[in-house]
Amino acid sequence: EGSVQVLELQAVRIALELCPGPVNIVTDSKYVASLLPRLHRSLLKHVDNQLLFQQLTSLWHLLNARKAPFFIMHFSSHTSIPGFLTKGNAAADALVSSAQVDTYAQAKASHGFFHQSAHALQRQFQLNHQEAKDIIAMCPHCARIPMLQAQGTNPRGLCANALWQTDTTEYAPFGRLRFIHVSTDTFSHAIWATLHTTTNARHTIAHWLSAFLSEPLSLKTDNGPAYRSQSVHSFCKTWAISHSFGVPYNSTGQSIIEHSHLTLKRYL
Image 1: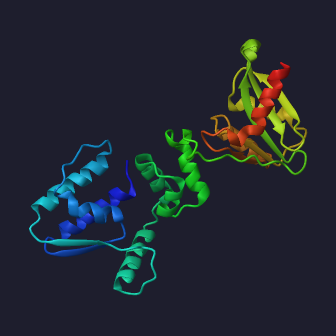
Image 2: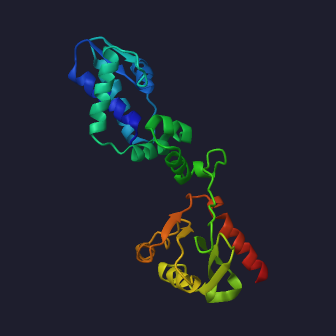
Image 3: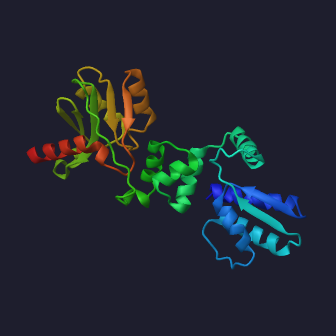
């Protein structure tokens, strides 16, 4: 439920509590600078984010009980204009960065409440493009919006046995053995399929042991629990296989193996 905005509101509240007399506040948050002068004249509506509601309520009571005047202004954090405001902002940034805040976790929490776009997350939290897209893809609401959904990639091996994609599919007529583990070589498009009673890690490893004549350089799978398990991680580490995952909630990064499923079922 936390976000950067909640922390900024808390910082302003602490500043006002520590300075009961006249005070000037300079902030690089447009959100706080535009909210604070209007808050004491506003009617608060209950919101689901309890942390945000608590901070707004505390500030509302504090401002209405305050006798001394205060002034708040917005200052851009990305400026090279010389002066004491720039030095003060740099000193504040240094104090925040020394606390080693997990900006990726903050970005995830912020997106969970505000649902910003990937570009907005990049600018606000200084994330790289892939990190911002991953946060969008992991959101159960935004991942299904085509304009916001990250597009998966399908790298191909430059030689045989360089990169394999693996996935499982179901074929009901096979009964107990309806779970089909399928692997395909992205260079030669060779397909290997085995029948299993379940999709757990033990059966996944058994499928790989039968599929590979020699260990491949890389494997790419989705984010299923079997592929994320410690057993699969140990297997790949033992055989020096690089294991990568597709983008969550997005099947486009597994289109090669998905096409293999269609080919296999066409012959079945």
